[in-house]
Length: 143
Image 1 (tube, helix red, strand yellow):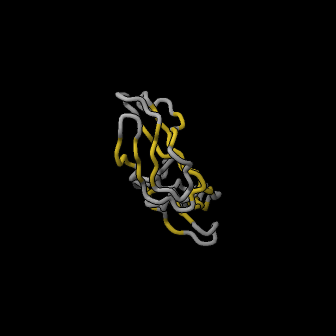
Image 2 (spheres, helix red, strand yellow):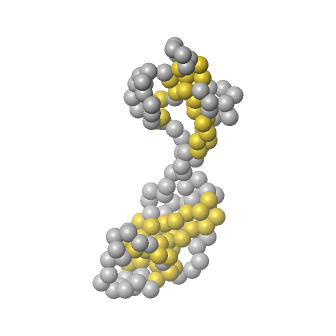
Image 3 (spheres, rainbow, N blue to C red):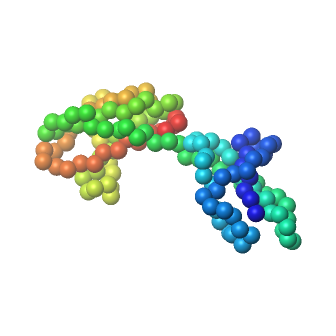
């Protein structure tokens, strides 16, 4: 039993790397070493037995790589400044805030509208002596 992968719609196939060896009775596996934001086709290759041959192909697109350097660059009692690396091809950026540890989120007010190419923003209207969590929400692009 083996898993094969293709990135050209099934024209060519290569052995996929799995998190462990596959046995004849396995019913699931995890494929590792894939690239972010990439379309793949996968199929099983069964050797021996009544089901020998290639299975149908399943198409999967891996998720994008999230921005990993979203960080605060400064704060006052009512504002917080943030910076992050550029997001390739993003159509919209937004900052969300939470005051309950990330259970619920709401749109944060920024000092100006955010565009897809922005790499910094200032969140305004915060309450003094209040703990906040923030996250960057990206629409479109590779992140």
